[in-house]
Image: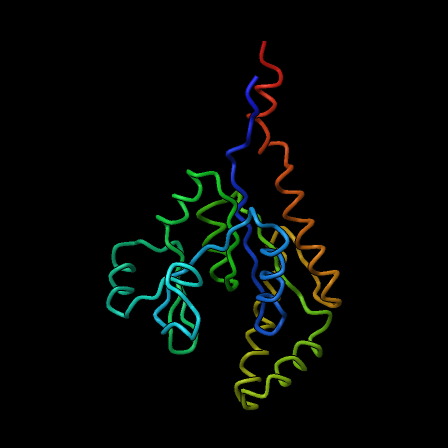
Length: 206
């Protein structure tokens, strides 16, 4: 009997308000689960030193990005400051056909669009232990003025109101624990019964 392998990919969506440590958690998860790949978004910003197109991001100019929007090539896209980021429908479909697991590091709006496109995707919302802790993290950056911080906190409150629509909520209080929680969610989803139907069918075949 040949060894069965599930071809049902895990699409793991991680979203959070700014300042919750989402990107740090995602990097740790990718390092802990080498079979999981980061969905490589398109962006209009210029590459930073050491970044390579097709690795960190697909770097394109504004006209190319506009054309992709017009042709409906993005599952979701969003502006961040003076730049834009988008998830390619074609690249996600190619990954699914290859049976790959994908991690999406997106904002709350992007998470909603991805969940609508792929209802069986797994969504995780990262929470701070309290709003004061998040405010402290934003101030600790030292890169934003009071007006910008106030706007960010207002947006955070709106995003919190949508957290209950996510499949999982992870509190990033103690970083090591949050890292373990996120990894546990991914591992558990890989073992979901409906993802192993092909293996069950082979094992019970006469």
